[in-house]
Length: 382
Ligand SMILES: Nc1ncnc2c1ncn2[C@@H]1O[C@H](COP(=O)(O)OP(=O)(O)OP(=O)(O)O)[C@@H](O)[C@H]1O
Image (cartoon, rainbow, N blue to C red; front, side):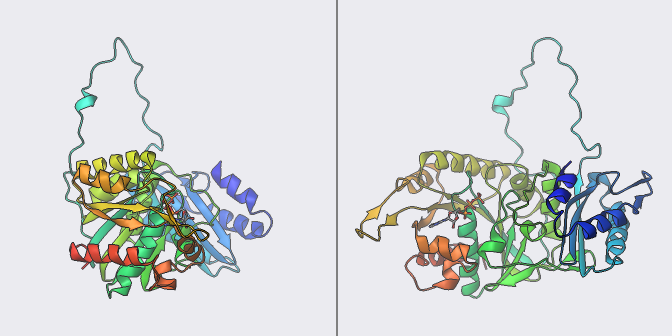
């Protein structure tokens, strides 16, 4: 369904090439099922632009390795077409049946499963893996969308790089990847064999799912696909040697957050919130989830904390003030600082150069430098 919708919206410019790509992929047959990639509906997020092609091959979770020759064959088949400049095919895993198993029909009263007292085990039995070459992985999270998590991630990344650290930023906000725009990065990352080469700007090595799809193309991915994509972004991207890799998570407490904490050795999580009650309620849920997963909480940041009016020069607090600090105290987690609501912060991010890069000495950039210094002091960034 989704593939058809994507081809319809491209009918103007790239239809011939996209059709040709689909035809090429329709010739790649998975020997175990005897079905080609298109008939088996395994191709997702196909993007064809100016001769640059990228797509995701959805594979059964149990067959990731066995599908690698098929991924390579798919890439080669597309590369062989006329007018193709580059091809990037990545695999993402989904459950073998493609659908959740059907629950048997309920009989009799609902049994008490003791869910009230259920606490997930702190870690999966298999030890979370260290990413080769990466000293620390720091998760940037928020309970609610739109509170400024990506703004904090990009400015923090640039500030840490400005302090001389080797910094990577993985934009894992699959529902709204905004780092390419905020860090002024565009173009497809190139592939080297089975790995993806990240891009770099403002001293930060960056990879985002947003670079693999069109900016306005909604990512409507199921949980297992999200988890597969995250693991690929962590493991298949050539991050090189990094002091710290920041992971800009999607808002909430879902599959991506859990997968990151379970599968990867995370040094800690920074939780971003606005001072509003409703945002703080969600931030508390996030803190609770990290605690249950055994991931250290580095602290809570209050974004959009205050606003200085250009006209009257007075400080206002449109979303309230001090709520995050009070919550941090109550929850026993460090309070990492307040970031003002400032037009310059938004305009800088919209323009592709975070305020820390654009006006490093400005008052509005100062809280991001302070946040970077707190993380360095805490020993999680160097
Ligand atoms: N301190 C700030 N001052 C001014 N504008 C800000 C500030 N923080 C964030 N913004 C703006 O608010 C909007 C949302 O910010 P951002 O995308 O960083 O939030 P988010 O929590 O990552 O959202 P989502 O989870 O939906 O991706 C952006 O337009 C951003 O430029």
